[in-house]
Length: 271
Image (cartoon, rainbow, N blue to C red; front, top):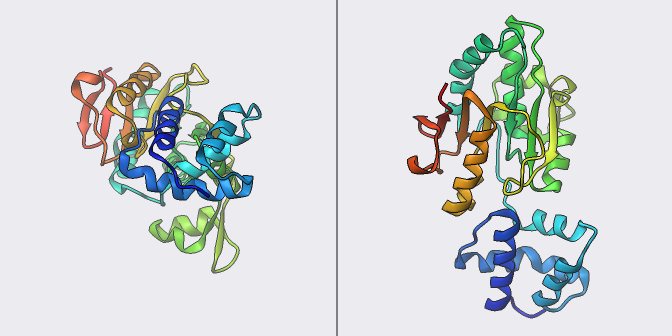
């Protein structure tokens, strides 16, 4: 197999930017080569140009799905950036409970759900909180661009030691432990999460507004223009008073959004 040339890398980089909003630096050339070489070998192709032509010509969607699964990074774990979950429980949920007491309806979108650790954590917090106020619909939307990680999220199976960052009481109440190696999220949590494949740089496939949006550690891969456009569309579907959570390594320019800055990585739409 021939090495990935600079010209081939530029084509692939432009394709990723145009279709997924992800900006790859020059240093990512080696990463792209290493992640795609096994696909080329399986397809019996000797050059990345042949693979790129195959990607463009495919009409089944299978080639793009496989490409996305290879290129995207899906690193997550339970209770990542814990202070967000504390703020969600202590500040956001009391506001939501008071304002939407008549509807008793939670509208939360976890936009980069990866293999499910984040939406599972959020759903557990919701169920813990609303134990004192039954009758609420706590079903949430979780999405990702990768079909591969969404399949993992839907299955709800995790290695048992991955649960160690969760409180002991949650581990026993919300997970079935198969053995020392594997645990599964209980249906009371899993059935309250709707997983969908959604590309954030494309029009959102729904019209309903959201009270809370979690979009953490994904916009770091966008350039400023793409990030501002995505944040604007988040703002348009956020309820007045609603919240946007982003990753601690990310930021939103004051000039690029109408959201109000609340604290690091937490923003709110004015009432």
